[in-house]
Length: 228
Image (cartoon, rainbow, N blue to C red; front, side, top):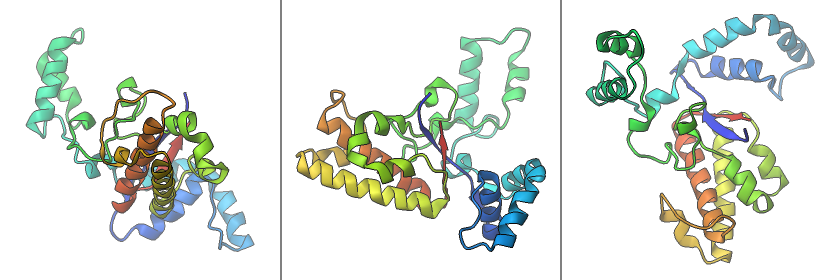
């Protein structure tokens, strides 16, 4: 399957500390500053993992909201999208009204406003991730030798917004250095690029796209789920 980056939700105002605590609990990453007693206590609450998941979801603002994805039954463009899907592939035994009712509230991410948070490099059309997911396997395939061990390891780590911002900073520095050395600095300003696999132009474009994705989501308070 390879590596995909999914943005995680961000905390609702006033829930920042609880959100971080639950994130650490759910990802198995206790606070580095925690005492031995706190770490033991952290390990003992694993039986309450489902309760923690529900609370974590309840106090977050989702990536769907941040990306401003239109919703079926709420936004006309999304409702029309659902109507078109019904006409193309009518579900057996369902009327249009029933279908629209079943789809009510569904976020249609591909119809979101264009941004660096909605990347060109994505496996969203494959259906197992959303279109705001970044296909980071391209970094592994094309840029492993450029990234270095430390940054590559970061690419596989779940993190909150500060960690994602740090990853974005590292990727941008690498992208700028590489593109300057290989005379492909124009790749930084192009959203969609056609270039041969293995070419410096493509490598630079992937690096810049990944950096922009990290920056876009982290600036808005979202962290990263490394899905592989």
